[in-house]
Image 1 (tube, rainbow, N blue to C red):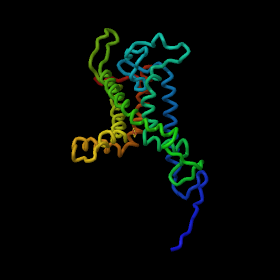
Image 2 (cartoon, rainbow, N blue to C red; image 1 turned 90 degrees about the vertical axis):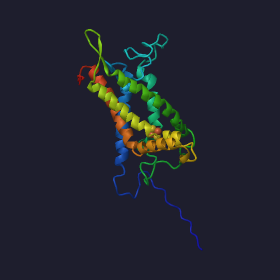
Image 3 (cartoon, protein in one colour; image 1 turned 90 degrees about the horizontal axis):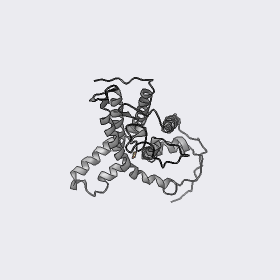
Image 4 (cartoon, helix red, strand yellow; image 1 turned 30 degrees about the horizontal axis):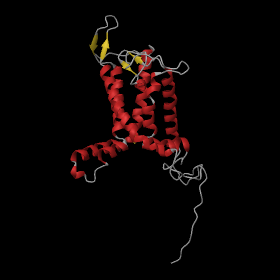
Length: 267
Ligand code: FES
């Protein structure tokens, strides 16, 4: 039997035999994620117009320290260095930000869109070596499961924000009454979409079923595993819908606070 050694020529950057518009998806990801990062960074540094009545922007929740009535421990602490910019969002945004940054779906998406690593499947990339996620710094992506634990706690906090968004204070008497505003619905949809994204997390699937050798030994774990798998199949869709809506929730609260939009009370 004869053998022949073949050396495959290395494609140069962007070279491919693909005839489809392979560049469209990374371009859309680049624009979508880029716009979100720019807006969320701007909103986080504002430090104002992030609450309106019973509504609190999800970028600022939980408000650990801050000037709004939603603050857990009161205003900016006295020990805060005068030279250091203060915004309640900067105390908490690292958690949901880290959760998304280390998400398995987003990693695949931004490696292609921002680093061209590769730009798309079977398209030449701009570098010759491949280190993968098994060496520094990308091995740090393994902290994702810990960000998941924090994200689950944040979901509970956001759910509590929806509950608080059902109680409106009368601007004259101060009396509090139960009601439903468009802002309440905006914040509730935000929790549903973030919940769908979080429940579909790859790491959660490992958490609820990955430790079992046999599913028949634990039908409850199998049901949880299947449920997570159901959300996981649409993880990309949940990721984008929740990303868009969390930014929209901040826009909604911000524009109501600025008096540009008027919140409509349904009852
Ligand atoms: Fe995407 Fe965990 S894999 S949130």
